[in-house]
Amino acid sequence: MSEPRTVTDPADPRLADYTGLTDVELRRRREPAEGLFIAEGEKVIRRAVDAGYRMRSMLLTPKWLDVMGDVIAAADAPVHVVEPALAEEVTGYHVHRGALASMQRRPLPGAADLLRGSTVRRVAVFEDIVDHANIGAAFRNAAALGVDAVLLTPRCADPFYRRAVKVSMGAVFQVPWTRLESWPADIATIRGAGFTVAALCLSDRAITLDALAAREDERLALVFGTEGDGLAARTLAAADEHVRIPMDGGVDSLNVAAASAVAFYATRPRPA
Image 1 (cartoon, one colour):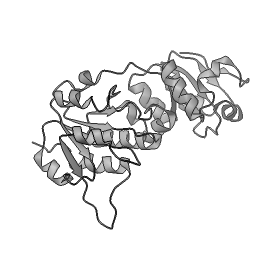
Image 2 (spheres, helix red, strand yellow):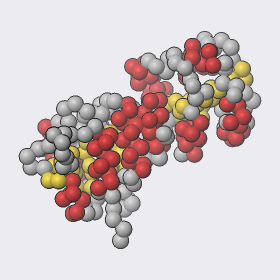
Image 3 (cartoon, helix red, strand yellow):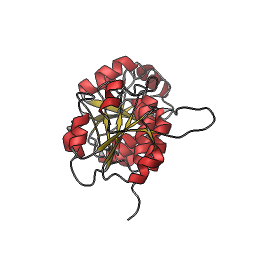
C-alpha cells in the first residue's frame, strides 16, 4: 500500500499524467504513445482494476480517501491527494467525481488472434467512428448484449480516451478489442476466420435485419459506418451481405450507437 501524499503545486511532475485532460488532440496523441489511459470515478476505476489493468497512480480529493480505501490498500501505486480547485487547475475541468486514476495500457492483440477460438461467434466492426461518446456507447451495448469482440478501423476514436471510458461505464475494459491495421483489406482476415461479414447500410441489395437474424450464422461480423457518410464504398463491395434496419416515420437511419444496440439484440444467439 502506498501512503497518500498531499500535493499543492499544480506543476508538480507527479501530476503529469493528469494535465490537460480536456485537450482532446493532446490526449489523443499522448496517451497511446505513453501507454496510459485515465479512469474517472469510483465505478470506472474499480472496473479497470478488476479487469487487470495496472495502476500508475491515483489523483483524489480528500473526501474520496475513505471511499477508495480498499483500492488504495490493494494498489502498489502513488496516491496524490489534492484540493478540488487544484484538481480543476491541473485537469482543465471540474472533477466532480473527485477520483481519477492513471492506468497502464496493455498491448493489443492481432485481429486473427482475437478472432481465434470457438467462443468468439459474434463481433462488431466500427469503421471511422470518431465521436468518443458513440464509441463508448457502442462498447456498452456490446458488453450488455453479448458481443464477443470489437474491431476498430485505423481512424476510429480511442475507446480508452476518458470520455469514451466514462460513457461506456467501464465496458471498454470488459469486451476484448483491437485496432485493425489495413481496412478494408482486413475483411479478408475476418472472413478467413469463418465469419459472415454483414454491413449495416441502406443499399438496394440490403436484406432486413430480421432476415439476417433468422439465418443464425455460426459466426457473424456486423460492420457499422461513420456517423455522417456511413460505410465506404470499398467496404460495401467487400462485405458478404448488406443489411438494413426497417424503420417507419420517414426516418432512414439511426445514430450508430443506437443502430448497434438494435443489431446486437436482434442477432444474439438463441438458446439451444
